[in-house]
Image 1 (cartoon, rainbow, N blue to C red):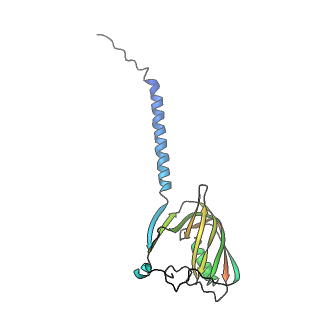
Image 2: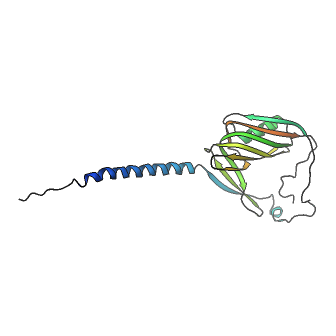
Image 3: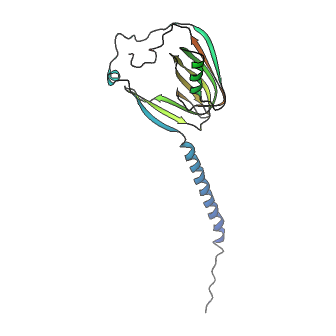
Length: 204
């Protein structure tokens, strides 16, 4: 019977590269999976912010409402708020506005950092207006600014945040938690200043 020799020597060098390729592919799959989970932390939802009645959204501008008007007043005092780690930024402002008996105020500035955030931005150009809520509870960022108003005890705050890639912001919402610290300054207006219409979109 004839003997057959099977030459396998040429196949042996291929085993290591093939194994390396498999390990490489596994590593990339793992990286992509982790990246997918990280990206999935940000959620977006669009909400229609309708006026109390459809007629108020449909109405045209009125000649009885001035294009622009001025409100004069003076600061009675300046209140500086300091927030510690893991405090909800909006809830903390609302708590101190109530505690300090602040009715009307101008939000002057803010500094610090956050562990995660939720903001909303306007997302259309016609009434009824729509808001896009953007939330990421695991995205750290520097708090580089805040402005807005306290209007009859209600907080209307806009924030600016920044990370190594970009600066962004919007209307402050619950779910924005403090990281290292946060400082917010309020200029409290004297009694008699009427801000009741300044953020009323139906007053047009």
